[in-house]
Length: 111
Image (cartoon, rainbow, N blue to C red):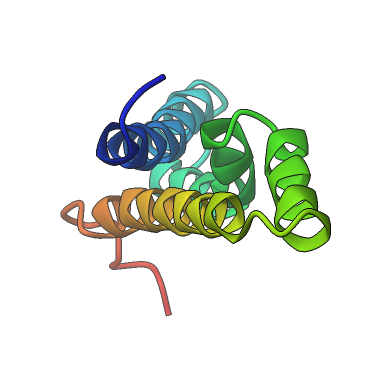
């Protein structure tokens, strides 16, 4: 069982990597299909954020079980830890999207 800080780093980096990886591969697919790659990358980065969070958490059922234990069995620490994991995964996904928006030329077409 990893430590709490180790688990936070794991959740952050997994969601960060999912967003970046999905965006990069959608850019490659856009080039192959003769579409604008930066637009495809931005669209995919926005679309895949929710899935990146779910992947980083290892599926949503474990999170739901921790909420059930927290509410029904009074294990508030487990529920609070799960909330912190979710926030950390959300931060990783948003940072991945933020990094993509700062690629030179990426934001030129955006309104």
